[in-house]
Image 1 (tube, helix red, strand yellow):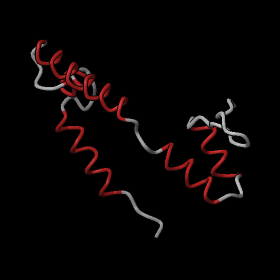
Image 2 (image 1 turned 180 degrees about the vertical axis):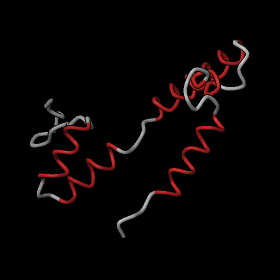
Image 3 (image 1 turned 120 degrees about the horizontal axis):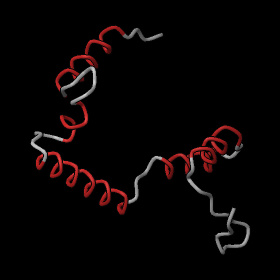
Image 4 (image 1 turned 90 degrees about the vertical axis):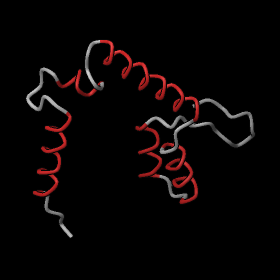
Length: 100
């Protein structure tokens, strides 16, 4: 784990394994909360990349004659339309029983 440059402090990755291990085994509730919050927070740079990816996928699908990226990806699947996927997920949700 790389040092943070501050004596007595470390910089931790928010990698799933590390954050789960800290959450499970740390006796410090403040540290557990901080690691959890950092691992669940997106950095703005990633949001920009994801938005760009979403836009390019949409444009690519349109150029290929599809109304959306979902339509293009689902064309050869069992649930071959976004509506079929939505229907399936709604039916699945209706059948889920919660233990409480």
